[in-house]
Image (cartoon, rainbow, N blue to C red; front, side, top):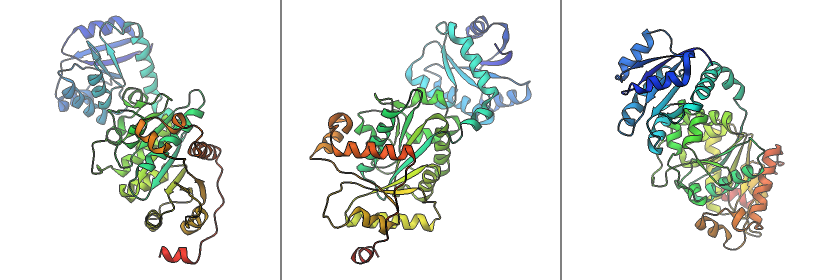
Length: 400
């Protein structure tokens, strides 16, 4: 056990004796009655260095303790903070984790694992900078982008993420970040009811770590982790582009693959953040004049903004032959390589959306499933599609 000093904030002095008995002499614990944030910060700044902070959380004081923990975490981001409680209700534990605590221990229940877990926290804190540098850029981010809000953006992103999750090796983890509108579409398609959203994660970006992921993120039966926009939001809530980009960077160190869904109405700064963090970006459109023109305007705006698009490719959804706007022509028009065309048979897609079952489970032989799995394989192996020749004639005139 590492020799260390811990500060204990609790109304009940029983916590001090419990911690001392469970941790032994290797950690010196100092009990303090709860104080307001300025007083606590001043005390931590003026005293000798503390290696750990324990904070009591109960159902009736959770919001106040969360504010206290947030203030300490902002001022001393390197200081591990651990929550204590007489019980571990899901709502109180979530409040504590979102505030920035690294773990939650229950009085007289977690005696056996307390010393080992605290020792692990202290070791992690001692090498936090090294670990962050080692893990930076480890995971790969794939962005599915559409010009305007549409359910097919989330539908493709969800199935692409599932395809990655199903092919993941032991120890590899996959995250779906659905920042597109309509809000909560991916959660509906996967029959999940998340209580922690993309908005929450962006607010918690400075405290996002493995503990928060395991505690707050929703997980699908196939192992896929999910963050989505709240379903009840009819108007797009604001997302800070800088924090969103920073969050994706954090996720690279926590997940092997991150699939992001986003639409053009999120704004150029947020789109740029997603594209810059991504290994590849997929522009999703279809063969309609309306969607194609919207996609053309989006690309024009991104290029005028100097957004790097060299790793962006085209995916054409709902493909049908002889509709006039052939994928190769669209590829040339957009000056993007064509990476995939997607189609599905009959009503399989709407049945999947309505049932909360993926196409992989509901209609595994549907061509949509084969195309998405092939797309995941292409992205995983780093293959790139050839750039199509630029289109001339009637098609270009339609898009002037």
